Length: 128
Image (tube, rainbow, N blue to C red; front, side, top):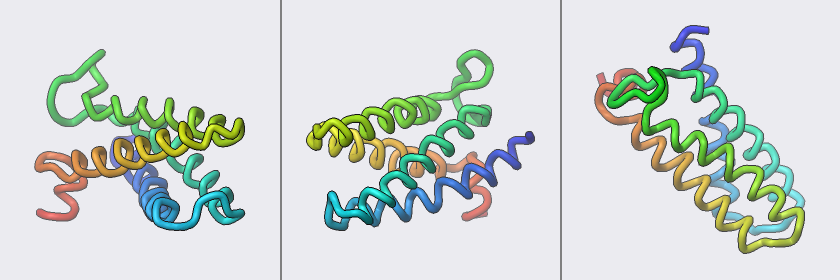
């Protein structure tokens, strides 16, 4: 797949993940809706992080000729989702909450901020 095709798929998963994650952050925890949307959010985040690993870094230092610093957030996501899921399943709600907040902040807010920087594809689409 081309970088552009991967970018479209990435956006198709990250935008609903952002909306669902924001909803989950500000609504009552532990409800059936929280659990249902939480599972959807986690799946979307795993898919979007996996897709991003196939997208070569466009700015800055390249590692292994492909990865950039922003890919560290993809690896954070791939780590945080199972930790959060199994923590909730095992009743460790504190660890679940910590993992989910780290996922939202790192995987959404920080990565989203980097994606909007000049020189990145999304910046060009939105601001140029």
